[in-house]
Amino acid sequence: MYTMKQIFTRILNIDIRYTTKVEDFIKHSGPKITYAKQPLQNEFFIRSNKLLFDQGISDLQITIGEWDEIPCFFPTGERSVIPFDIFAASFYMLSRYEEYIPHVKDMYGRFPYKESLSYKHNFLHLPVVDLWARKFLTILKDRFPNIEYKTKTVRFTSLIDVTTSHSFALRGFFRGTMGLFLDLGRFHFKRVGQRFMVALKLRQDPYDNFSILIDIHKKYKLSSVFFFQFAQYSRYDKNISTENNRFRHLIKSVADYSTVTLAASYSSITNIDLLKQEKKNLSGVINKPVNYCRLRYNRVDVPETYRNLVAAEFTDDHTMGYTHEMGFKAGTCTSFYFYDIPLEVQQPIKVHPFAFHDYSLLKYNSEDEVLKEINVLYEQVKKVNGHFMIVFSNELLGTKQKINWLKLYTKIVERYHV
Image (cartoon, rainbow, N blue to C red; front, side, top):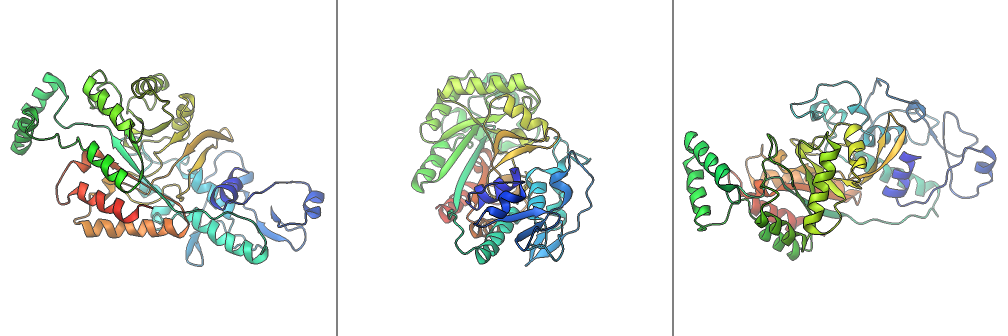
């Protein structure tokens, strides 16, 4: 039911009902589908794989096939209308089933993209769940011409990560002095010059590009969410002090024009009390509920991470994606609820998958290369009228290396805004 609700209701906008009673199924005069091992009569039949009837995790042997050039798995045989079990395959992707199977995590405790089925078989760039659903709809319309559904439109949302709001400013005397000595010790004389320019207020802090971003978003009427880290200083969390009034004023001013919510600290991911405290503190600054969350370094450990977010009363998570590789980690560009396999329950937290994180763009050498790769993803999202979500940090947007990232970001927004 969880999987079918995602396919029919959230992706295809088709209302459905379920029954396990044969007499009710036979009496129904409208479009109907059998999902079982054997058909009842000559109805629309999809042969079921055992996955959705299992409990717990099994070490599945998966063979990748094709459905009109779309990768698929869990084949069904000749009697099935569809050559693979669309529901079992979709559940495998959405539930992040493969992350429960033993694997070696990276240095931050994340599931490595190279371990994923979609990367190994070269379909990470495809929102396969949505593509399967759209093709499924075509077959349903052929069989049931009067089937009712609502057409969706493609959407575009920009997520701005603010784990370091300023490079030099607002850091206090001690941290500023230590940073200066570190730059001198590493012969980073350009940064030393920038520090003095910012300190003397002769130039803006390079990471402080919030007013520029807000102007861009307003100009193109772009939906955006700013995720501010609001945490104590630690090894992995080095933002401005939460007691700094200018930092608090910055957060309030951004919240006047855009959604502002929490970028959870690295330390809070496994500490529910700390996570709740960060949520409460940020809410106190913006005087609004904080319901959305992004996790530091896109660090997700299923199912514990989502259980913690639920315990901290978050309703939405925006961490579903890989940091260093573009594509659709859960095989979809449609938001979905997290399914907790060990507990066999849908958790009350909505997961919003992003298409790419800005760190995944660093391997490219030019704007043209980056735009070409982004366009590949966008065209796939557009094909299924999905939600194109991207993640950029104010930090990268404040740097100019091989690429002027702020200029490139403006081009992306201009090209894909709806």
